[in-house]
Amino acid sequence: MSGHSKWATIKHKKGAVDKARGKLFNKLARVLEVAARAGGGDPDANPTLRTAVQKAKAAQMTNDAVDRAIKRGTGEGDTGTYEAITYEGYAPGGVAMLIEVLTDNRNRTGAEVRGVFSKLGGSMAEPGAVSWQFARRGIIDIAGTADEDELMMAAIEAGAEDVSRDGDTWTVTSEPSATYDVRQALEDAGFTIESAETPLVSDNLVPIDSAEEARKVLRIVEAFEDNDDVQDVYSNFDIAESVMNELVEAD
Image 1 (tube, rainbow, N blue to C red):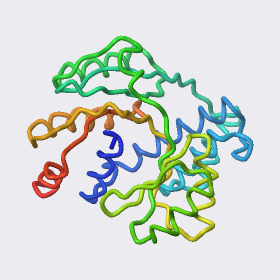
Image 2 (image 1 turned 180 degrees about the horizontal axis):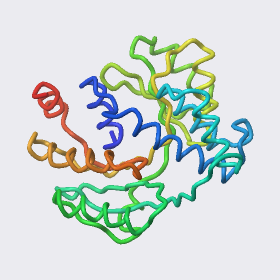
Image 3 (image 1 turned 120 degrees about the vertical axis):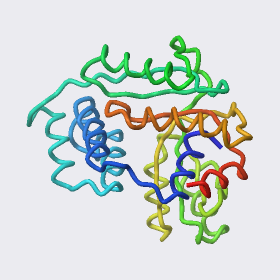
């Protein structure tokens, strides 16, 4: 399991939500703006925007806020200029990290990213040093109450590659381009979708076998996620189930 998925599982088990919903909505609005600017404001004709709209609505962003962000992207409202940058580096223990940002000030954000790595025991890496370990995948999480045989049949027929169980959740994987169609087919079949994303996933995992080591890695992940410019943080750590449970119980 990728660090991205493992961290999502930890937050779910803790019952954690974004500490500031306004901060989350600000990040989602940037994604909507950039997607609309790049591919137009019609979600049906712009798959990237369609995915961004789904993510925003799943976070309970209002339709008006979504529409305003799209209009800013298409030049119909107050516009900003955001640049997409991916930073690469390592967390403590040699865990690979990719940090995707949307920023209106490259120098400021670059300094902030370097500062987090330096302060929390990580290190920056040259472009390409880390990214080769990751590939984008379609990841759809389904409520664990689903019937395995029915889910497997529906997912494969929809074009998914695999179905697996992770704790209380079923995970359906697919090619990124097929994520929307697979999600729609599963919804039409009556399954409860918990999330549908296209994260960067690594098969080259770094095992984390102690709570102390896990806290160091998660501390740097949380620090990046708390930055307004950071959209997504991907990593290749794999926390042992016993350690994950220990972290949850400690909180």
